Length: 282
Image (cartoon, rainbow, N blue to C red):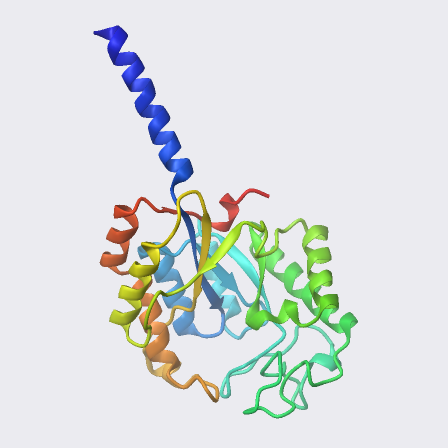
């Protein structure tokens, strides 16, 4: 009996190990911590009660101090620096940490957009005479501030795609990541972006489309899903920009997805392994 039981047990262990290696792995990333109190509360909720595995923090944002306090009180949460050189909302703004005139508008704020937008004429960095030295100075300040407050930063990412502003900015970001020894998203190269598989206007649509997406993840691959949790409250109802007016409803829907019992059950049923950035090979 012992002779037959031990090989069976060993085979079971091997099969379980293989199943884990071949199962789809998924990073669920919540972006923009610091842009509002509502966003901070929602992001923390999605990490503590939901499937979210990583939070991106905007260092020059107005609610950054509160975000730092929350994350210091929850040191197990995986955190990335969301490098930012834009301030997109119409009624809440943030400025550079540094004296960088080429990436500020006439009022001293970041420009609202990275690339030209018909709703904001001349309101993008790309349309103005930005200097690489200013962007480097600002990126360094954001990285160093984040590391002082949250030394376990696991990676760098890009708010509104700002690190792709030009080949020079992409190379600068890679150089800074290497210098500060912080991996940069989307490295490693085998990390695959995924998104909702279907409509996403309402909370219920988001939940169903997210579950549909889960069903299409392939064994052995690692995926990244990105969205922006929030709460449908008075604060977030006052935050918008032209072309994105339903911010509170939309971002409450993301919170509903990340904390949904249906979604949690689907993740478990499909054997998907939820991981933070720090678990990626580098």
